[in-house]
Length: 139
Image (cartoon, rainbow, N blue to C red; front, side, top):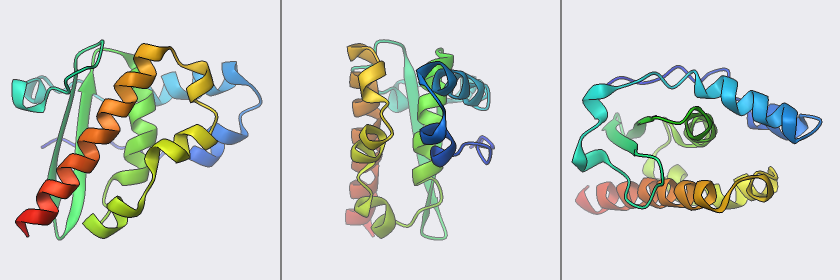
């Protein structure tokens, strides 16, 4: 699998941005970090319920989750880059302790996103937790 370098993504930087326009610029800049992955664009990785097609895959390496994502939307890519910065390389226990939706809410993103983008993010978050639960029960 191909993993994106999202080291530049910083939730504290996003929260500290002076206004929504500054946050939006960061999100779209971070969206460029998610490179196109045609090999990921398969039905098994497709996230159902997203307005724009989005794909999420994972694998467990040394008991740590690695996630890879792709979509046709730079904004969605940027938003998911923020999520991936929170969840990538976490153990199953660490991942299941995170409340990703609450973290994003505290960052103030929900009030600026369209209902369809919020819905898509919720679907992606649910998929991350589902993948973690599935892996955990298979261990």
